[in-house]
Every structure is written in C-alpha cells, then in structure tokens.
Length: 108
Length: 114
Image (cartoon, rainbow over all chains, first blue to last red; front, side, top):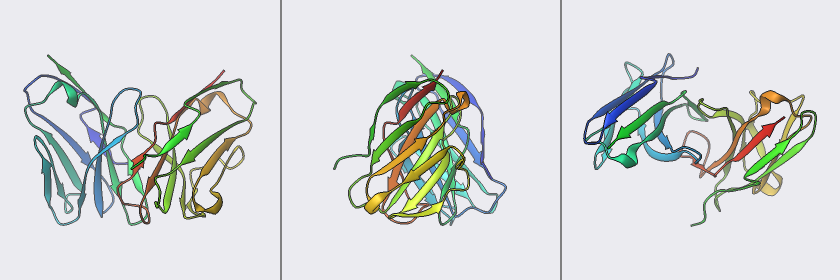
C-alpha cells in the first residue's frame, strides 16, 4: 500500500520552516526519507525505525509514530538548497514503497 | 566509494522497438532494485534481486519487461516491445543486505518512447 504524503507542494521563503507528512494504512517497520532534485537521482536523508524515535541532522529532522503509522519531516530555517521533491518510503522487512512525493520550492 | 552506475543516461526509441538498460551496483551490495519513475510520481519498484535471485517482481509487466542479474553483480533490464506509456526514468538502486535498508540510487536512464 503506497504511503500518502501531504502536502503535495509547498512554496516557502528562505528561512521559513516546513513540515512534510507521510502516513500509511499498514503497520510500519521503518520510514525512509529521500530528496530528489530535478533531473537527479533520489538521495537518502534518513531512516527511522519503529520505536517512535526522532532523528535529525542540523536543520532537517524527522519523527516516526508507529502507533499512528505516520512520520513527519521537519525542515527548519530552510535554505535554497532544500528545494526539491521529498519522498517518504515505508518499509517492511523486505522492500520500500515510496509515496508520490512533496515538491518543495524555496524562494530567496 | 563508487556509486551506482547506470547506462545509457538517455534513450529515445519508437514504440514496438526494444531497449536495454544496464546497472552496476555499489561493490558488495547484495540487493539490487529496478524502479520506474513516471514524471511527477514516486519511484515504483519493478524488480528486486538479492544476489542473483529474484525477491519481488510482482509489479514487473512480464509480457514485455525482463531483468537478470548474472553472478549477483551487474544487472540488465529489457523492454520488448516498448509502449508509449513506458516513457519514464528507470532507476537502479542497491543496498547492503536484504530489502528495507537504506538504498543508494544511480543517476537513472531517461527513456522516451515515440
């Protein structure tokens, strides 16, 4: 079952914050976040394993609520380089199913 | 460490022709994936190999698509005959162990079927 991402698209000014949500109708073992810039391959951001943990690196962090079967990606004080499409992938023990993506555009 | 390599980067063919894509995963990665990404969509898994065995090919249109991973390293994906709706980016990815782990993607092959 493909996870559902929201919103579909976001436009921000540099320095503003954004939250991207990912939810699944199936129980989750893991959630993977990737960013894809136009014309490029998806690049791994982080993986969260069941346990409700929160992970982060500098100004990008994520949470995983396995009870609610959802994850959120937080981008703080966004930079121009954050522009791209963000995909969540929900994982069982054998594969990842990707959502349709959230397009993020940062304006200077 | 070298990343996932794919070739060609671009391909334009006419419908009903055949085409093949090649992928070389990161050295030592046991699992290899082929995804189809249609414009504006997320990657859709076509086939997953662990070493040279198929783990999942449930979404591979087997009447026209085929894939192999000889010797558990390189892989080729073939489409024969191609249809207009096959126009997409074909991404290859690899991971260390069995699926569900962090996947590293290649640059992709952009296919346009006319």
